[in-house]
Amino acid sequence: MTNIDTALAAVCAKLDDAWQQLAGVRARFAPVDSFNVDGSRGHYALTPIHVPGKNLTGGVALNLPANVANQLAARLFGLAESEVDANMRADVCAEISNILCSCVTGLFGPAEEIELGVTLSATHEDMRNVFVHNTVRCILGTASGCDSVTLVVVDSFALKPASSPAALAPIMKTLAEERNRMKFLIVDDSRAIQAIVRRAVEKTGLDELEIKTAMSGAEALKTCETWLPDMVITDWHMPGMTGIELIKALKQKHADLRVGFVTTESSIRNLDEAKQCGAAFVLRKPFADDELVSAVRKALETQASSPSLMPGSVRRGSVGSLTAFLDQSTGVSSSLVVAAPCPLPSIPVPWAIGLYAESGKNDVRGFCLLDRNAILLLGGAGTGMSHANLHASLGGGDIPSPVFAKASELLTKGASTMFLSGDGQPIVLARSQLVPQPPEKLIEIMSKSSQRIDYNISHSGLPSGRIVVITR
Image 1 (cartoon, rainbow, N blue to C red):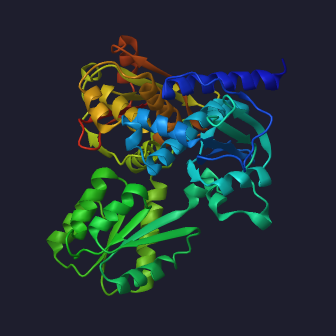
Image 2: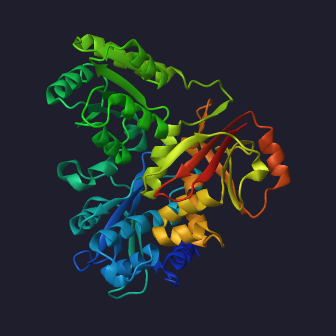
Image 3: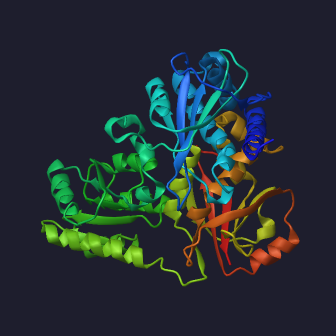
């Protein structure tokens, strides 16, 4: 057996295990010679794979037949098949693509070097374009026939320049490019002021600007549920929610989000309250463009300079970044609030514990602990567990294997979000485990660590869980 055959056999075994957890049956994935795109039907999804430091952004394209998608959606959402709609089937296809993609990363390199991108729902035409414009590494499928599930593994999503379809354009962007994009949300009930603020922001000289607007605080909060900006520039006096109420709501969930005011408010008491709430700046109307440009630049420079690290040091990532990562990974908008630390042994078990180290090194530099409720909230949301089933599970009983597997996957993917290294080396998950009782030796090590932050996480009105992040 060649090395390639050995790698494919290992990948197929992982796919079989994952499918059994998801569908309750063994799928028996195996390499297949071809895939009839024009004859395929059902649902499609594309999940990119990025290997940092290499010119490689490949991934998988998934075809999930409609009846299979229907069965999986019913199982994962806890519904009867007759209650499943097209949107649920598409959501399940995208989620399954992400899970199955994580099983094939061994074909691209060491697991700790792999980053999975955002899974996109795709069309039949998108799937055809995968074959037309990309190098196919292998095709993996289940038993032939109308129920066959097919994964097309490609080395690159680099499309021909003359014919790059717009639907696949997001895959062309690497994770690094996404991080460099600066996103601004302008909140004002006057479209004229929105235009003036936008004009000034565009004069900041920042590249890759992405600007959205909102007419009210409520609309701004809704926007931030699915699109987290780098900075919010808001008016104070607006119908419904005021600017000060908006910053309080935003800071509760995204503590390090930069929020600036452009306002006619002149009360010293109110302006002091804005600063106490963490306002990056308060600019009085009317203002000159260069005044806002200066305020924005100063706020960004202050934020950029604060996280600088000494070589050899490791620090925690920001609350906002972690919240955005969890929301994007689970598909659920969660509330993440800093909580007062409590004695580790008093945290409800079982725990999911992640131990983190710099890539290529054995020295543990950080820990992440999820208590029982946090495992269920994150893993349950990530696997599409219904609200009723999730509520029942939070009341007691064993943690389902797919739920822990999803929570463990988040511990892996969230390494670079939770921890930053002063050496510039990526922080990766060295080991994760589910422990039924607090391990005394590990508690002793964790208790001696110098930096700790606790979060309460909740969503959908369910009981909250606890996440503890510790750096050494």
